[in-house]
Length: 237
Picture 1 (cartoon, helix red, strand yellow):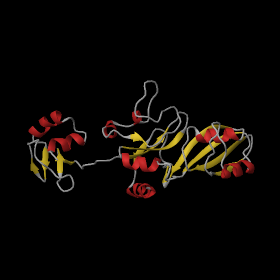
Picture 2 (cartoon, one colour):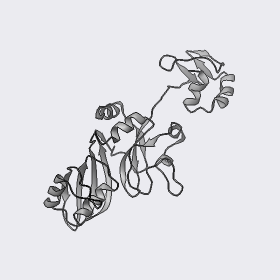
Picture 3 (cartoon, helix red, strand yellow):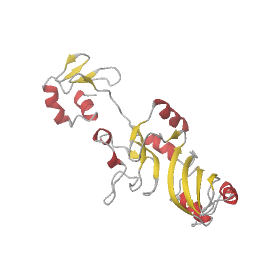
Picture 4 (cartoon, helix red, strand yellow):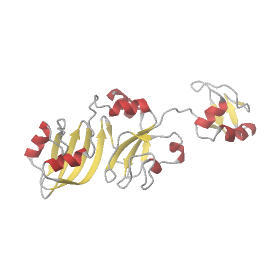
């Protein structure tokens, strides 16, 4: 690709904006100053530096975000803060989008990427990717509820859910549970509990397939996926 396109794709400005950078002699290709914006470079083999700092070419970005409550799982919204608004300019440059969605009041694991193929595979109903949630429930969750979830419950629109695994962590007036589902219907976890006469008062997604929320990430914090995490996700395909 052209050198100016390479630099522009890596967030150093538009093609027009990187020309003064090239003209100033700040850019080197394989150790030699390069001022020609039309110079053809190979992303995989050529070493490109700007002011001595190597600029590694990246096509796709994969971010683990601890979504905080109060943000919407969208790239833009006219009223509310979105999960993309939480990112820095270096990440937003790649135009990432959330893979799936978490409700506005729900927190926890959310994957953001610009890899449309991977996102499509992970969200495909044919894949049955496990999603595990922690929740606090208004009411005592019972073994009967766990059995009902295992069989599949009828939601308010008549849809019968696929089998889900409900683990009761503590039972009482406000119960704590972990729930693993393999689909992602609108407000599904909340609607499943309503089907057995209970309400979710707090919901947090812990994992999606092999990807688990990094406990060191606070709400609103994010980091790139590790190579191992990305490899595990791609194996979900």
